[in-house]
Length: 533
Image 1 (cartoon, one colour):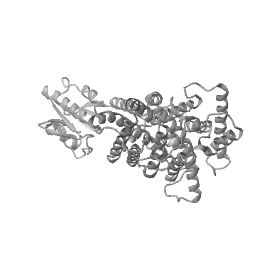
Image 2 (cartoon, rainbow, N blue to C red; image 1 turned 60 degrees about the vertical axis):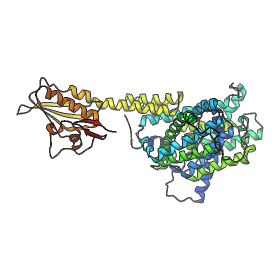
Image 3 (cartoon, rainbow, N blue to C red; image 1 turned 90 degrees about the vertical axis):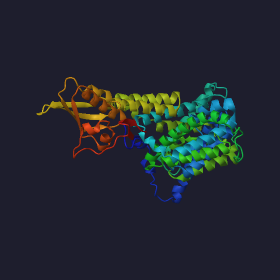
């Protein structure tokens, strides 16, 4: 299972190094301007995404916009990674749709509250640190799959409300405007960094469309985004066990998907901004954001890799950009809806297409033939599963396959060098880890019937890893005892000696015995191995 200490480094290296900002750099007026403009760019990109995901979940567009505002604001204030953007996401919306269809939107609000509480508990228990167990191939598959999902999501802008493709001339016009936006985003950084390129791309395309009166779909064609401040609202659901049975499965799934996507995005943004840690803090912030959102009529959310990349490429590095994005979004809802609704969807599609190009790990296409076959399979598998199902399932599948491949590879490494000493004893000098995967192979190495009366098993070059390994050692010892032969165990750690049932009779203690502990804790009870946690 391939892994690195900095699995996102290769991906992060593709972004502009001149935009790096150390956490201790002062927030100068110039930096503050960049952060505000980055936040404005993100807010513009959030509007159609929040509306579209609200439609996917089967709720009012304002439910998605309120979620984008509240989740974005709270995570920007208290999250574990400045510069990361959160809001309503499609990964969560596709899970919510069945809940809303069967039980109504009030049950969704209650589910979002419970989802947040679960995420807070995960953060307090510091389980977020387990994201480091996700191997590099899984992360490559994650960004590739997510890039494809973002791309496919933009294709809905080329369809009418009833799912039909727009007329050919309308599609041609939109593609031309998309290309114009992408051209501005690509070319402007070569001339100046004073204005975020995505914001300039949106502005140029919008001015051309409005100035020439071009007939192309706008944000207002999706839905009206005008509204008031989100109001405190207790979910109107019965407070009983039946309600809990309905919402708990959805809340657990949503919490898992939200945290996995958030923590993987946290790693990516951390590599770009040169920061580490913050996983548990991010879990708590995501949980608090969703809990609050559920009480204010929002659909909940999590980190958004697309908008986070827009923020990063626009120069956003501090909490200011995330906070300003949320406040701009609220301003759009309260006072600027008529103006924002005139922005052509093609401009926002162009921005997201550039995000797709920047997010997809293109180097993974060239390394598929160079990396181990298992890693190549994992990259492709996670990409495909992300597109066909959802992110959480894809990551879990990738981790399981990688772990099984790693265990199988290590299981094949167990071997023994044997020789007969001057005293007539046969020596087994083990090499390789002894754990559940190699326990069977370990037992098959020995020949109790054909070996001499004294057998010495030396673990100096091996390592006992788990209860299965201890049980295998006991089983081998029992076979030799059954045929009246003696077996000695050397260079076992003190922990192994304590846990082995026959340790007192079989272990030969030496001054250079290793001191490592067995991976899991076990207790000795009534003379037999008793597995702990």
